[in-house]
Length: 244
Image 1 (cartoon, helix red, strand yellow):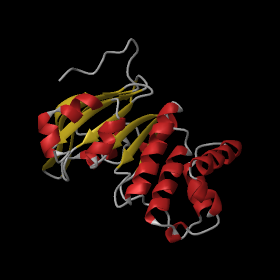
Image 2 (cartoon, one colour):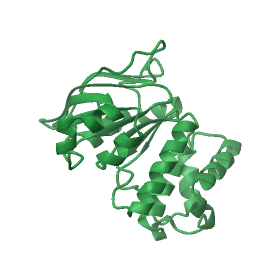
Image 3 (spheres, rainbow, N blue to C red):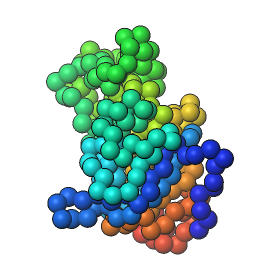
């Protein structure tokens, strides 16, 4: 499996030797990965492999016990979450986690809490352009939306901070196949618009089909990496994650 191509400039995100734990339980061990600017990178692995822990550590929700996280050339390993958002890092959490009693529009506004009023207005328009159903339901309580609509809202909310890198945690979870196709189409569009994406996804077939590069995480360690095409053809990946 070939190594990720070297770039003339430093990658947008560079993780080296990252470790994290819950109490005495090691959740991540020596994780190293890179996301180039404008790239869509997939991270696949079984339940409990540490995928969500990795995203939570990147976004500052979980502390890193060791290793470094560099974003845009700056060391953000110990930076608070809000500083990471300000730098251009935004996460869509697993399970959407929208604010149910609040309106769709207010959920979007919360995502833009660090931006100007004019930027928030533009951000809402962009989210509604990506997901027209949000415009139709902008006054409704977010908790009344379907699962697919809540996922669209969660992505729209994350985009309100105008991120350089979007961390997506299981965006297809619990969605009907047609909605999965729509969500993945939007992810591809965001990449075309210049947003870099780190995609954590159990639907390895769909993730690797659109990924420039991918990593396989097992029990907190990166065990395999390569281009999306290379991983799709790898015998180990095909048997363990693609059902082939």
